Length: 312
Length: 106
Image (cartoon, rainbow over all chains, first blue to last red; front, side, top):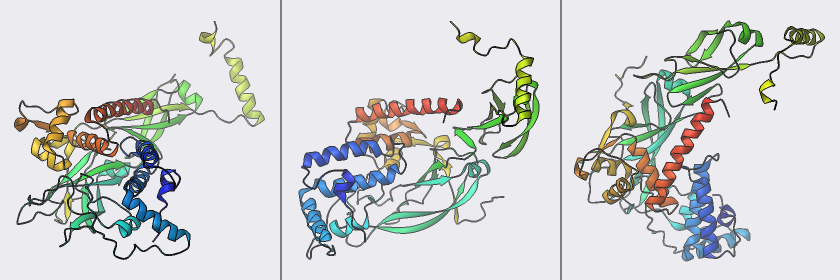
């Protein structure tokens, strides 16, 4: 089991005061909170920071951790001290899922109890669970079948919360969008005493696509065209998430013009649109023939001044 | 082609498009107390139809909004008013990102 350096995670010295620890935590929590952060791996970083804070903010836990880390520095193993009570009560994260602490943390401080916020043991009906599933753009266009792994909290006879792996096969409906949730009835926590099970909510995350940008139901693709295609018009083949299409470029198309393919965005009762954003791609001017061609073009437009509007 | 003849495969309903929540349902879906959801309505974070709490009906997008507001309040130790402001700013950020995306800026 890997030793975790909680002081390093928070960026504080081992001699930090409780105030300094709290301040460091707050700054990092704001930075990495998954609801506000666009940093890569924000969720994983946030969990590390939260766990470090949980370990160091309580004086007893901090003392136990300092002891373990001193022994670790001396090259000794870090089993919890004998007789250490692993019966800590944690408040739950409030969304029905077990707090996600590392094995290292749990080996020192024990596991969460099922006294989690919002879970009343008198209510026998199962609570709702939440999870996320990442799909590709193609999955949304065509629909897909996906097998997901869930880590589900289970309560043992001593009332302690543990995690169990569970697999579930789900249908991803066509046209589902980033941030939407699928509700799977009865796939949440089992009910007790014959009470109904809770539901499972799956939040959809769309993986970034190398070719297409997605904005709600609409999809954008950059379409490079040659200068003569923009000036004279052309019929070109464009790639869409649903296969290739023939596109007519109107003559005199300026760079950045958007050509709308109605209904070729994400499917649905009201399908989105696909926009091809025109970009003028200049042929390279690295051969004598190419240079001559460009020079000829300059001579063909003797009075053309693209910067005329900029002059004072 | 996908048929649902296999009962082991679970089908979901898209919450944002097809589901409406009563107060008790929303509380359960978000593991929230009634008081928390009522407070979010008072702050203007949620806008259910209906006059009294027992008549309230929340739209599908309320699920994510509620969870985000409560998670922010809890994790970042914000008041609900602070969390409400963060949600408004996040909405504005989303609008701006959309505009950048449509304009082709990366």
